[in-house]
Length: 326
Image (cartoon, rainbow, N blue to C red; front, side):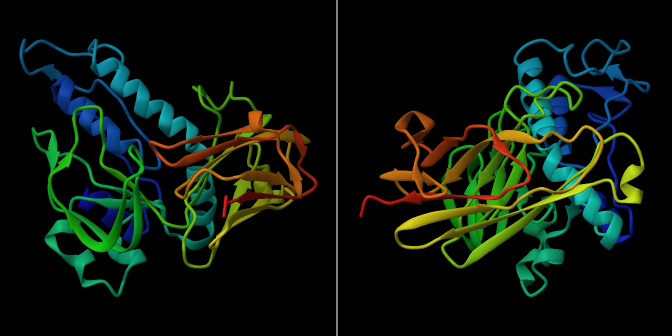
């Protein structure tokens, strides 16, 4: 883990490694390794010279071959990686300009926090500015020593929040759970649920996973191009800016027009917003018009409000408001 974050600081924006090693194969180790490597810019599964640790025979290290529960766990994280490609692709575009890759040591984003230089932060990293990944790297279902820098961090799986700086011990992480936390203010673009390939994805839907901050407004600019050619070097690309603000009585999401053109760009798409934290809204408004109750739902267990819009044109922006009951 320190190697990948350090590689970024050496100017290597794209780095990865063999999932599960190339010499030995163990289904549990493979699943654990694949989980966190799904948050690297690229992921690489290969046979190499792998040998099964139990049978001592050659092993094919594809993620679907170990049977259950491993196949389902590996599928879960590979599908999550696929859904997060708009987030990672935007980081890639940023890296082309700044040289800063997606995998980052904590101290890069929190240079004034001495805790990010300590032993607790060594075996964790940031994937972009928003995801803190703290892999389980021992034969255990408990992760100790997870260091969270200043700010509010949300457990990606449970919705529980932590206020940093703090160190989390005794984090329950069974085999299917990667300790994963999201920074307050995060605005994360995702492809729709069920996406298994960028080639077959539903181009007419884009999801936004939102973590409003109690302090101020956050902003994000999505980068898109055709994903195949180098026409982006000639300006064939688009950008869409989103802002997120929460105050005492409402959460406001402003989605700008998608500016720019590239081959295959759609003219309209639906949006699915997942807004974390807070209580169930009394009303949800799109450009000032109240959405029907069938267009949104609230999960009290995770405190997530899910909103689905109709198809909206990309050449015009829109605003979304979640109004509290008070």
